[in-house]
Amino acid sequence: MILQMNETQVLEIDIGNSFAKWRVRAAEHTLLSDKVALKSLNVNELFSAAAQLKITKVSICSVAGTQVDRLFAGRIELLWGLVAEFFSVQESCAGVLNSYVDPSKMGADRWLATVAAKHLYPNTEICILDCGTAINVELLSASAVHRGGYIMPGIEMMQHSLLVNTAQVYCSAEQLGLEPGLDTGANVANGSLMLAVALLEKLQRQMQQQGGLLLLTGGGAKYLLGYSEAANIRYVPDLLMDGFKYI
Image (cartoon, rainbow, N blue to C red):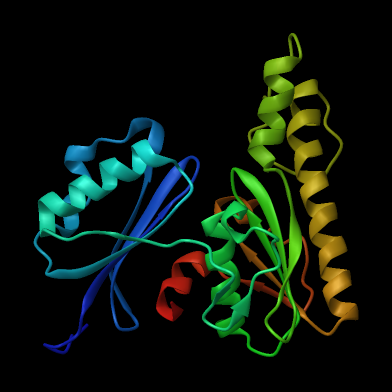
């Protein structure tokens, strides 16, 4: 990869509930990327692979809370002397109109993903199925109006809620599938996937009727890939991160 001397190197960070993803981008090129678990975060090692790069801008989308945000902001200031720009939800952004009565109550991650969807697939009815710690569903009209959405437990959260609240239930399934489980652990594992796939299929049919697209994203999307071959489904693993390009 050959970079132009004047290409700006931007650090983009998505801090979620369980993980933080980051990448260094120069124009359309991703130079470096990584993913770290927040529960085992070592701040002194954070961004060490990018420490020698000439970062000129840092953009952060975070739902992790003030304490985590301060750790990231402090590390960025130490390495590059920069003040990180935290993305916040507004009534409108980059041509997208928010549907919330109080936009500040919407998660920044959901809003940034919606902004990205509008620019990647303009003039299109869109449903985003973001499968992470939680499953977020966002609906976006062809005229770029956010029409609301849904939030429900993610696949692993569904499993965990059963395992911690039900005595003598252990998730022993090594691989998720839709076949009926032959032990309680497999029942729990495959049952959670069954619910997520049923949601995928319902949303796909809904968007097909509207002539629109279903965008599949998030760390848990890997569990859903392959369960539908519908032509109106797009897998966009970096949907949220791509939103930084348009704000």
